[in-house]
Length: 452
Image (cartoon, rainbow, N blue to C red; front, side):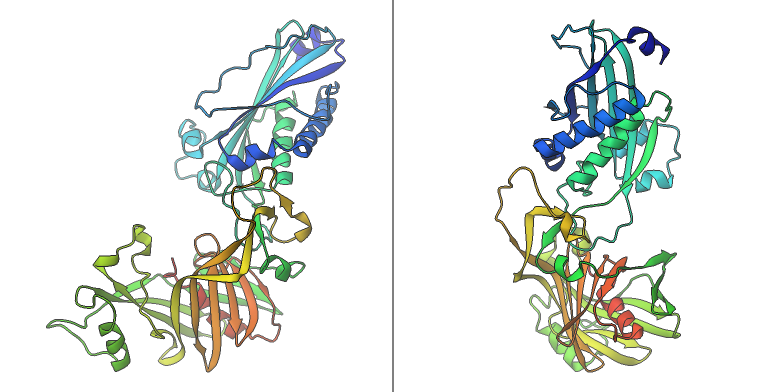
């Protein structure tokens, strides 16, 4: 930056003229309306300018935010300031969110099948342009922040009204840390980094049924190695393998009709539009590797042409009413259960204007701009499984974004809360006396591949 040093030897301050944000994301731009967030950004920017340019920011109490409509082409910053003080330099910062698909499409650096492309949820471009008091451009530096999700102990209902091109959302502190990283690389004249990978922790809704229960409790993380799940419990490592789903037609009508248990046949014939529907066994095998035990989850579903869901992934989720769904150990029936869909529980609430990091309730923050919604929302459970496991009642309540949060009860006792859709990713165990074998059986039921 010899050019910068030669033209700006006696400057005393840098004035941040504009923080231009090209982003239609409601939550992130709402953060910029909050004075404390803007002050944090100004203080961070001042420290970085002092570190890399040896010149302070003129105002560390606030920043001038300009929210513009998103376009694929970001117009160049125009020096429209009126200040003629020769001791001041003038800074414009652009903060732009880009769709990862189009971002990587324009680059040849990464192959099409790169894991980088798969993991990156969004891209933020941060650009810093500096002008002299005479409106001569002194420098213009930029960096791309490639944002992916960090492994986090957070458990709960993910906050989804977040970054524009994904369902990833962050709390204000994480947002300002993203900006701090962008400022650092854009204003460090010695840096030649065009892109920086950045893993961030997602945000979660605050609630009255997960947050307080899991606060301060140990999280157990589950590793997935080519379909074999492993986690540490006590002094041993559990290994659980979940097989691919299998669909088997139930032939109860016509010349090729087969014989099935009377209770199942009666339940199928009692279902609505029996004559016009097809019925399917949904099967998924599982193996408890440590104990050398093979399991089979077997569900029954109705495909009713009069009630085809708009979302094709839900085609096989019209589960037959009653306890006609099973977990088998070899030829023995371990569990029978029913599956209810779309169950509202009024006592469990989510607070849409409060977010936190999913593990520390002290991190709860209120969103800067009020949301035109009620102060709390009753939890809608995607599925509620009720049944008997080896003679003991159990219940698994599935909620979260597309069925990614499971509350597991044995008897009338909450024994586990787990995060994940088709496989457990992490969980909190509340009953130390629960055997790992029993826990695996509950995981096999609650994380079966058919609970879309």
